[in-house]
Every structure is written in C-alpha cells, then in structure tokens.
Image (cartoon, rainbow over the protein chains, first blue to last red):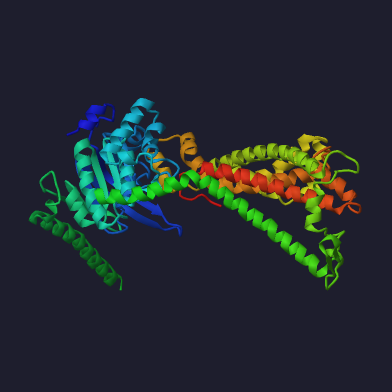
Length: 285
Length: 308
C-alpha cells in the first residue's frame, strides 16, 4: 500500500526501529527550586508501520514524551533512538513529521504555500515541490482549496492541511500531539477514518497522543496507557481489531471490549496510585 | 467530508470578493475619518470665534455679527477665519509675486516630503536591523536597548542644533533628525513582532531542522509585518515632524520648516500664511500616513486581521 512513498522516491528509509526508548526520564526544575518528575523509566519499541497511541491523564507526560522523540526536548535520562539513530540525528535528517493540537498554519501563506513550507526549508527543487504539494493536497482531499488562506477554512480542514504539511517530505515517522482534540466529535470521527487511510496509503509509522479512549482504540495497533506523577507506562494493550477499520468497527463487540479494557487500565492505575498515596500519608501521619 | 467542505467555500468566496476592493475601501475609510477630523476642527474653530472673536463683517452677504464675548485668543490676528486661511492659498505668496501661496506651499511640501521619505526609509531599516539584532542576541539587547530608550528622552528641539553642529548644515543633518524620530517606534514594535510567532511554529521549524536564517525569513519576519506597519504609520508622521523641525537649524533654503520660520516673522502682516502652512504640513503628514496605510493593506492581504 506504500504507493505514494515508492512512487515519489526519496524519503528516509528506516534503518532501525522507528522509535526505541529505553529508560527515558525527564525532570523539570520548577521556579521554586523544586523538581518535578514528568517522566520516569519509559521503555518502548515501535515497529515499522505501527500506529501507537499514548493515552493517559493530564500531566502524565505524554506530550513531553512525544517532544523527546522529536528532539524538541532533551530527556534527563535514558536513550532515544529514532530510525536507528539518536533523536537529534533523526531530527536533523528530517526523519519525522509533526502535527500539533492546533493546526499552527501560517496565516500569510495560502494552503499550498503552507504545505510547501518544509520543502522550501529543506531546499527541495521546485518541480518536485509542486508535485509533492499537489499529491499531498489530493491525499487529504483539499486540492480544490489550495489557493485559500487558513482563516477561510474550517478547523477540520486546517488540521488536514497540517497533516499534508507533515507528510509532504515523506517522513518515515509521524508524531501527532492530540491533533483532533480541539475538533467536534463528528469531525473527529471523520478525520480518524481519514488518518487511517493516509496511514495505510503511505506506510508511515504513527505515534499519536490522545485524551480519547475510543479514538485510541479505533486508530491504534497498540495503545500505551500512561499514569501521572511521575509519568510512567502502566500497560501496553494490543488492539487486534481487523484492518481496514471503518464505521462498523466502532459498533463491533471487540471494539467495546477493548475500550473497556483501556478505560479500566486507566482507572486501575488511578485507584492504585491514590491507594498508594493514602498509604504514604497514613505512614507519615 | 462533503458537508464540512460545503460551508467554507461560501465564506471563502465572500472573503475573496471583499479582498479585491478591500484596499480601496480601507483607504476611503481612513481618508473619510481624516476629512471628518478636519471638518470637526473647522467647526470648533469657527464656533470659538463665533463666541469670543472679532465682529464678523461681510456687507456683501448682509452679515454684521458681534460675538457675545471677547477673548484675545479668538481675535482675527490670533486665529484667522478658516475661509481666510484657505482663501490665502490662492493669493500671491509675496506682494506682486507670480506664484500663489498654494503653489509655493505644495512645492515646499514636496521638498520636505523627500527629506522625510529618505529619513523614514533609513529609520525603518535601522529599526528592523536593530530589532533583528536584539531578538537574536540577549547580550546586544541588554547592552543597547537602554541607549535606544534614552535617545528618545532628549527633546528633538534641543538635539537638532547639536546634530547640525556635528554633521554640518544641509540635507544630511535634516535626514538624520528624521531618522532619529523614525527608528525608535519601529525598533520597539519590530522586536515584539519578531517575537510574536506561536512557540509551536518555532518547534515546527525546529522539527524541519531549519536554520536561524530560515526561521527568521519564513516565520519571524512575516509574522512581524502587522506590528511593523503599526510603527511605520507612527514613523510616517514623525518623520515629517522631524524634518520640519530640522529644516531651520539644518539651514534648508526650501521646505515647510523654512516657510514656517519665514511666515512666523511676517505674522503681523499676514497671519493666514502661517496657518495655511500649518494646514499644508498637517495634510502632508496625513497623506504620508495614507500612503503607508495603503501599502499595509496590500501587504496584509489574505490575513484575517488587517489592523487600522
């Protein structure tokens, strides 16, 4: 199914696991001189063409983890390998694309100019650039809107432009930080199906941060459940729903079982953590 | 995606239709505001004279009106009638001269505008370069920003003669004064503008392994444009004021500043001439402002916010 990738050549050929984390931790210095442990002892290996969701309560460090993979933040401990090389090398090699919760489009650039931006930065020649922009806008079904400006588009359309921009230089890995978190439920479900289609067409590995249990289950090959304070991986749940997934998937029995499993995993950790806290407080008292 | 795609095109069409005439409409609006302002000043002016001024004697129109109160400040010598000031533009600039006052002042205004324009352009460039330096170097910012601010605490009328002492009489000194008044607002606004991009857009550029130059050129500079124009509109009028102030100590033989000094000396015999010069100077500032505003509207086309 990786027609687009092979058809357009170039692109980073993954020479190792797309993402390999071992013993990753992150401690922030707070303004009062204290320290906050955002992440502790994270181990995770992501295989090529996997779709991994990170899910957990606010403050569990899932966005921080995504930024560490992208070398936008440095970890305090542990090693981060992306495509078999250190995260920094991978960033400099432009091995991954990034999509944030907000589209972060440039208002002075038309839709096509926004998608073209990374190619300009990377010095891709003009012919290839125009071809890629065209292909990517077709991929997200926004070809008719290429001359529009961001403020003329709906939130969902803006986010699709952001996805096209993240994919236009054919990264082997796509990092998505709650990309549909600000959208209404209907749009979100449509874009979930869209992102699955793109994932299958391009063969890109996706690391996806979300707050939504149904979204995580629907999209992923594996769901990484995290707990907060300190941020840890509490469980990794394989999602064995058949591919390709569609609206019927959301109504299948197995889907509901998995949603329940993820929910209980999230809740279980919460209960265990508060019990531990109660014990600790009791011990002090 | 169909229903999602149906709504936006309508608004898009509306916006693009609006966009084609937006520059014209924005300019007309600004010009109308300025016209209303001038009209308002004229009404207050004549109202003041109607209450406190000298008697209005216009036998041809059958008007012989005595204002109820009297104030020296509203007398015809201190505050000529608006129509006398406007009318003076058609009279000869000097007794038995072929040139009218209006023609003379338009020539003076064009001369002054050239000086102001050179000062404006250089001042804007200095402002953008300084802002770029400050945004990229904390050290430079800490070292120089206090001087930039201190420079603006010295009154320009005190500084202008010193600049002329240093740079000599002539256009260089006059332009320097215009630069001096122009660069400051541009520097301050541009520092803010260059820092205005969303932190995530900088993260995005970092994820592309973009160079500082690339980030500056493709993100910081374009994001700063609305801020830059806010300052340029202030700078446009400030450069005209600076030039007019500088023309006297700078020894200009032409220009509105020179005209103001000359007509000030002839005030007793022709107060309208000084007032007419002030009117033209004010119109020049407004015209320059409108030119910058027009460029702004064109430069910000397509963006959601085109600031006033």
